[in-house]
Image 1: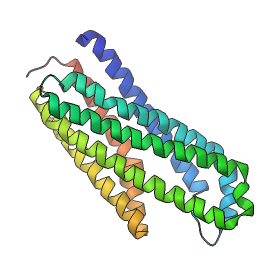
Image 2: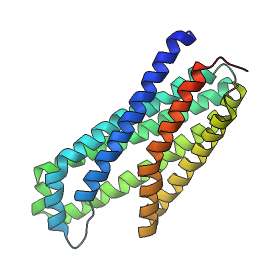
Image 3: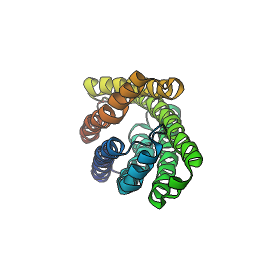
Length: 234
């Protein structure tokens, strides 16, 4: 594939990934603010809110399906660009991105099923089952999210030295390494929140993973398109 034919694909992929991620984040913030799927003393009210908010959960995780599919493809995009420099690390990077996307897709599928359960209202008449379902939803999304961030962080870390060898702008290489560290940090924070049930950990996970991550990723993707456009200086 020539640079002329590769660049439009990279640009389109970056637009799809960043746009779907930002829109999914906006939908998620709204859905979780009006109807958080948290078991507790106000369970009947929570279930009523979830039944009303199911379209937002469908929209949110439908968009995340696009995001995570694009994340899985990101490794192949970088492999096509950086693979000739060092095949083994580039392949490992591509596999890790694919795993990150796959884990995200599993989480998305689970939440789409959960949204249909919320819609049906079947949990309204069965509080014990409702507690279990919501506990599984929260634990499943937390651990799958933590694992996905871990895989993506490791993949981004491998991408940094390869991009440096390709003659990428040092600032973008630094951004790539910083993004890798950020993703690994988010993974640890999300795991901490899942294990400890700490309010502080939950707030940090929201700030670093849900809000900041798609913004940082968008900046990184803009840089990726610019780097692919530039002639190699390797």
